[in-house]
Image (cartoon, rainbow, N blue to C red):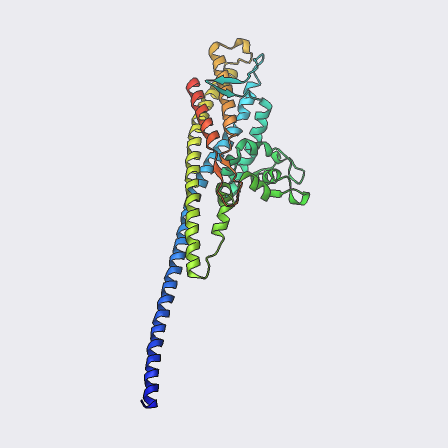
Length: 341
């Protein structure tokens, strides 16, 4: 066969082979591009889903936190009223159908009331999730700590607005960083609070998910996106449970707080309008009003101590909902409500 013909045939074969390789390469590139698009779309979907759940749960927790602080702030009115009653008996621990309600301490109630007022005053300029953080860790704890001293030496209770909240958070963190403490950041962590409530709700695990970038390799990127989807599924399930628990707890707290306000009004009427300040002049009805008011205050105080969130021991796992204490508090609330209503 003549050499030119052989070369021509070889060139033809080479061209066909080249075209085939090019087509195969183009297909691989298209597949990789499609895989990367699916990975990015899945990751964005997971991010959006988390943000929606986080937003609604943070709102529910913030509403509960504000209510708890409002409840605690109102105790000063009760303490002022009860202290006017002379010769009153000691209101010791009460037990109702197996439910033990601790005795109240007027001075402690006043301190908690002032602390709660400080925190309420600072919520206007605080990040979303701050009030929810108080509920997550037990609002009573935050209110007590708010009576500490700021790094400037000023009593936190004398501050107002965001300055009071910031100082309270710093106190919870062990003091200002300049003074060797952990500062606001540590205080926020201890309360489970962070921007948008992320730390409060899910712990450190979400930062590993939302803060990571997809691989440049299509197959690895899609695998990452799938793993993210599985983790976000677990986080969203937790967020839904926390939201439901917060709403259910708030409903019970609202119910007890409403009837407590009615009894407090009755008690103040007995003292301020009827002019009765000696226990020996109280009728049986007056005494029952007083005892029920004390009972409701003690229950509310106890409910505001409940920590809704249990911090996870692992950075790879979300926090946990404190079902045991939540359900126990709701059960106690129902029993007390049945007794006083």
